[in-house]
Image (cartoon, rainbow, N blue to C red; front, side, top):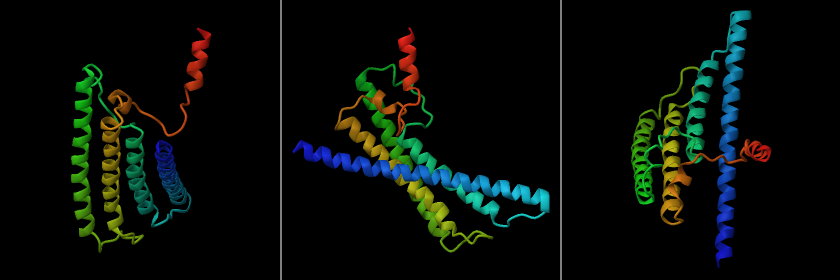
Length: 193
């Protein structure tokens, strides 16, 4: 029975890793679009005194999506700024309560953000950007996606804390989706001592 559950968890983990890998590829794509269009527009304006009319809007749209998607990845990997001086100095029971409260407050704030972004996106459903005619709805809807993703990540964190009894200090440590680039360096340094 437990092997069936671990197989399901393994499958879910693979899907989640694929999803976040796709988000990271989209971030790189938006960054590349932003850099290429901005550089090309600067060169064209300097050399030919002309530029792409749509480059500023496309670069701005790319930057907005880059920030929203990057925030989701940073939340998953615990790479947002955090002051952990209090949670590291209190007993384990207090650590769990503080971590629980942090997650609940984050869920509440993200629910407010999601609701506000949804309302604003509905108000702008008929508006579009001037040059590209890109619907403004999709820009504000990115806030809805961000809020829902944060809520899901916080719920997973609460499940790790309550159901799987993980240590709150382990849950607040930054962790990458890949390997630690300094792992070999630390091992070599230990061997040299």
